[in-house]
Image (cartoon, rainbow, N blue to C red):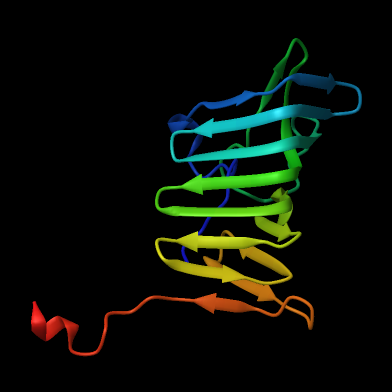
Length: 171
């Protein structure tokens, strides 16, 4: 499944796209380099949407980019300048959609320094009629690969739909 999660900066600085976040409440601490959106959080970007009960964003001070990632993450403008994303955690009733792909879980974590997304809490990814689930799903953005981890209570399960044998000849 070609699933890449939200709020990752993949464009060069000259190709920035807006990200709109709505919520019942935002608490921002410039000193703590942290923003917390709570209550009916909805993130919209030109290529994706994300919903959650809560989103926590840990920021690096501007100029302290240790990720090695190219291009900007999402910046929070302040009177002192901007900070950069270090980690994003979406909690509670997490749903996401990008094109024909959609996913859900109880917790999604984006680690900027590793360009990695971790889905936990009964994660399920769907693309059309195809479904993938397990105990934990890890998405390595820069490597364009995924890893699904299962256990005895929640084994890895993949359902994919293929054409019926001989169906191509009938058309």
